[in-house]
Length: 151
Image (tube, rainbow, N blue to C red; front, side, top):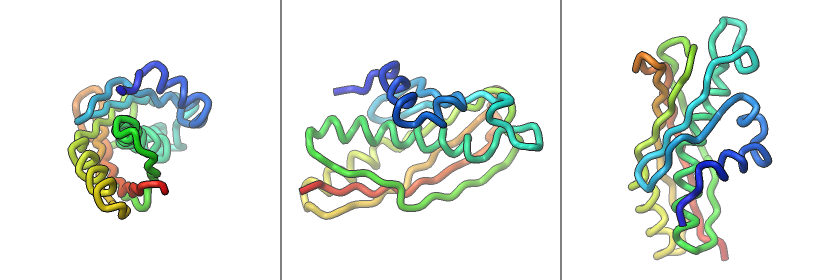
């Protein structure tokens, strides 16, 4: 069962309200790739007239987490997911519309198959890259997701 993007963005309003109010929106999702956008506005800025790092982090995490949710739902199993670690690099001021893309869907598939087959928890590192409208990378986030079959 594929995640409906419009319904997923409504879900963020109720379950991730700070992300929704900051303008974080899922734009594209399939088994391999997720795209999330956020636009620099007064509401999500830092004192240096660029986007606050945590807003970028919310958008980046959603690009990895939306794929994780979609693929967990597709298994039909009860599987928990949690971010265990993350790191980030900021290479340019984030102004305008920033697009975060994660293309690590195959890593999720492999981790889910292993956790279902063995019953043991698995971890997977996923990368999300944020680019501005000129195509310049403004930040890169890495998230270590853990998945575990619920008993």
